[in-house]
Image (cartoon, rainbow, N blue to C red; front, side, top):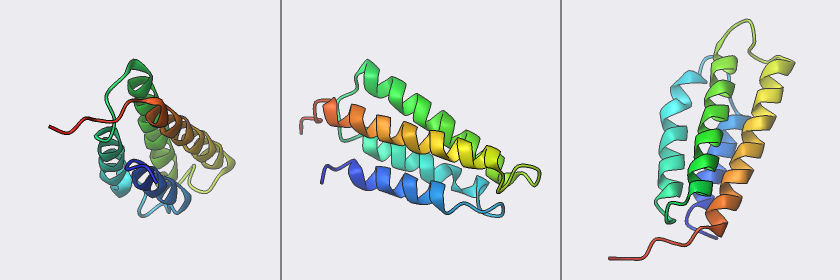
Length: 103
């Protein structure tokens, strides 16, 4: 398993277990997991774009999940599906990027 896969799995787990009460407080965990994943590869424009898109979609999901009017609605469900797809795209970009060289 690549070093970044564990971080991507952690983000997926967060996105699939959100509740209105816990959603927004998970923001730092998502940011940290994405940062840790990025530390395993050399930065490329594709990685940067995928990471930005994934973070934005994850945070939109958190925003929707944390609001009473949208928590648990089809709108949140669609945002979560888009965020999960963005995490998959980020993992694909990470797999294509050269690993960080030690030293």
